[in-house]
Length: 189
Image (tube, rainbow, N blue to C red):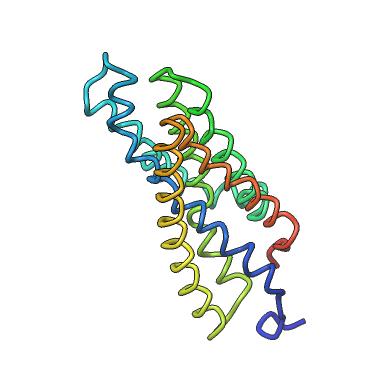
């Protein structure tokens, strides 16, 4: 079937776009920096802020590596693997109060996001063409902004109601998105 004429289900489109919800969640726990400073009194303020920004370093590195990894294991598997890595690493701080474990888990969280980042955009171009592709690129940006707003709100509410560890529950969003992606997004042609 001609790729330009192929129709995909609304669930496939939603599942593909939902990856952007997870991408936008990386800084949602940044409001916790003052609580981390109290939890880790032996560390400087800049080293505490490193916990919040550590994912960005990993994203940069693994954004470059993601296309190579996608060639080896396939784009769909790379996205699912990235979602699972970001989900598992993202929730580790719920269970630990060790600065170095948190720092490593935040880096690993960024690895997962780096694997997703480029593919979240390029897969839209792989599956869709023309006007539909352009519309979905715009909607993807909207999903990212929505994900940013929702994850910051939910993480903040969890922080206020249950303490700083609980705000990391926001990263469990990666698991249902991985399930949706697995079932509804086909392997790219």
